[in-house]
Image (cartoon, rainbow, N blue to C red):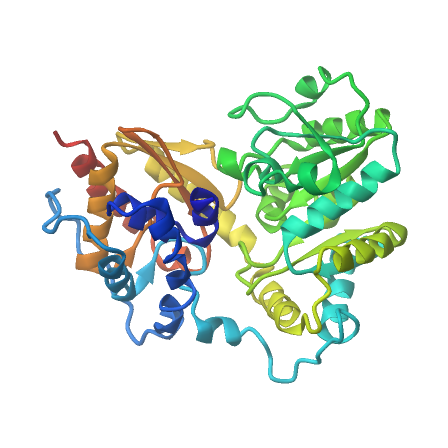
Length: 431
């Protein structure tokens, strides 16, 4: 549970665990600091002066030991003025600023800005209609249940690292009686060749674009079409886990001249998130045909998702879609340049390489504690927050970090990013 939560809130709780002797229970009891104490600091966007990195300097060991408490780590974080990944620091003020004062409220999800957002998403994805839901966990379980109820099978085919299987306590199974059919290996992307080995009846095929746990991997367009055609030939529904569809779009635009609507057209239903790359407060939409979405409304009620007012989340989502929806092409171009620069550093691997989306995984060869101590040292001396902890510890000398390129990243030159990692790796590998 702790690791799953960490992968959604910036990994600060992992840091607390790595740097203290507290039990999982003790640490998890303090996880709310990310959304309480940290929310009171000034938004990086309002910082009067941006602190630039000092010129490249000789590698040296950290001048201070790694923080020994979460309070100390919090103080270091709050002292930072620049953030390497995503949209930077999320604060109460910055998130509330995404809700326009003139926002029209809804009533139990009906009308107001909620309806406005649903119409916009349906238009953007060229689907009949869309439904706003407060969590993707709720949304995807329910829509897969609908697909299964219409067919003779309860089986859902997806990659072994599917979010529903890895990060959602397998609720699809416990709540809906669905059966997972995982296809391929955990580090191998899903492919039509692997799908051909599935011979049992299938209710639906779920495809995640991009594949987060593989560093943002994407199939090329012809391969994606082949996977969808495999499902259709079996009478199975096709569902897109497009939590990061905005991140996937630039790759298909660049390599196949395909739009977001072209991608969505391959699938019966499409789920998109608003808080990940876009940076809204929370929430998602599922888009599809009118009959499916009407049934999904019933499941929203059954899951307890029809809150009295959903407008704050929908208004935030609508604002950031306008603000950042058109920026992912720029993020993608910067990510490719950063990936190429980091790949040339001895002791670093980029996954996948070449980079295929505005996200990548940076694998650092070095001692876990030394890697972390070096990053904290950068935060202390330069006011730059790199990562709060590893996305995955693949061994005592192999750490993997999730690097999402966003507004905050664009404040750095590629050279600056490279220099940051050049300072980290020699320390991490020192005997």
